[in-house]
Image (cartoon, rainbow, N blue to C red; front, side):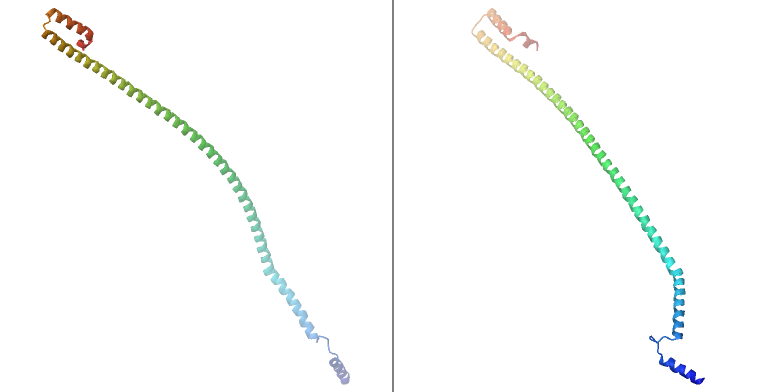
Length: 185
């Protein structure tokens, strides 16, 4: 029997595996594959599920952010519309205020012009009154000069020996020409 074993051993030695695979190597390879599969399942449970959860949360956050951004954009558009409407209202109010200010300015201008006309009228009336007073004063001065001239003439006439009747007649005639108003004022 020994010889059969030796023959088998020689035959086994003479038969070389293509990759050098022997029974122990195959068992080690199978155990390694099983260990890798178990390790994959454990790592899958420990790492892949949390990563999936993290990705799901991230996707949810991105979705929420997109929805929030869309809502914010919609709100911003509404605010812009409101502000545009307010700006239009402000422009209308500004036009109304400007129109009111123009009206007030026109009323003020009319009032100032009326006051100026009244003042001008008063000044003209005062000037006319002063002119009348100056005319009366000038007339009085002329009358006084006429009286002085008449007196001087009367003195000359008296000096020329006019009788009293002629002198009285001349004085009365002169007084009539001058007027009674001069003597009364």
